[in-house]
Image 1 (cartoon, rainbow, N blue to C red):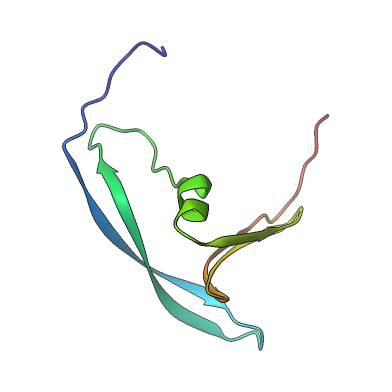
Image 2 (cartoon, rainbow, N blue to C red):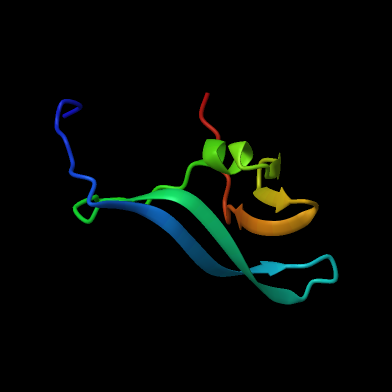
Length: 88
């Protein structure tokens, strides 16, 4: 139902602690700061906006299996697919 409304109870900055694989194959811990994050406790999904990351200055490199966000050349977030399915 697109007409339903969900209350936003807060807005702020969130720090995400995560791990990436560097060029040598070593797993490295990173902390990424996300600004203007909305707190919606009744939300059924956790959403991360690629557009907001790009607006904040990150760059995105992606292919069919992996996407990597970088800030000033440093990888800050990466994700991949284990299995790719394609429907046209």
